[in-house]
Length: 252
Ligand SMILES: [Zn+2]
Image 1: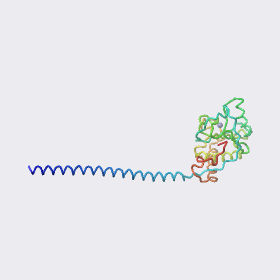
Image 2: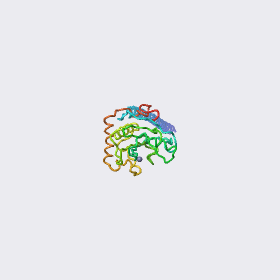
Image 3: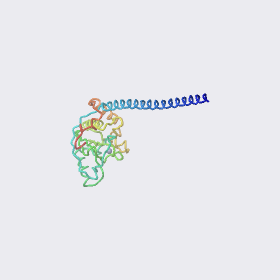
Image 4: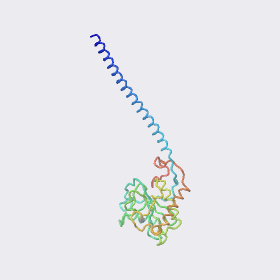
């Protein structure tokens, strides 16, 4: 009888001990778990901090000087300045006026006149004249009517031409190189793929000379890249998005 009581007590002690061990194991498990979560959180916090600093300091190499231009915006109207938002610029589209000998001012007047004539829907953000002069007709925050399916995500440049060949003269060519180079920086575009011809969208013979002479087009894009290389500078990648630096209050 005494013996069995003793063995009962022993068993109960054993049971208590086991329960204690389990309890301890659970408590340790929770503690280790919490420590692990804490450790992971600290590592994550450190890395996200490093990433943020890195992002903040990330540099891009762009041309920041806006080419000289006349900002002479069209009167808002449904035929040439519909005031539809251009939310994201993904491309620069180069065109030619198909109207030899006309000036940038004359082409702007044609776009402006559409509000009265209602002849067609047409316009361009920029027009480059025969003396290399640049007229901006539409803010870059608004769509123009120049590039069909790409009106909603591109800016357009119309270039004046001296004759039927459609070849730009040197002044027009140089201004177009400069304007494209600046726009690439302004909208964070890659000149190799984001400068396109109207032809690349619709197959239209525009800009005529560059459609008929693909090598000349390749050279044009190379000239833009060279211009950026020679005239660019390193700036923070938020150079434009973080403020108004380099932007124009009317033309954006
Ligand atoms: Zn065109």
